[in-house]
Length: 61
Image (cartoon, rainbow, N blue to C red; front, top):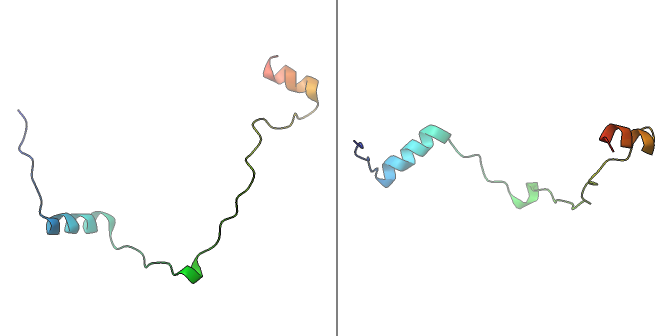
């Protein structure tokens, strides 16, 4: 048997959100924001350490 689903009013939902998450921090002003800088993506595979033959030995190839 399924239990009846309780429906909350908007005020009750707001109260439950406040109890669960607390107060929101104050908004950040545009002067306090930092600009982001795009960077290159990381290489897929790191450079071999100790030489290519050692790299192949570690990789099993």
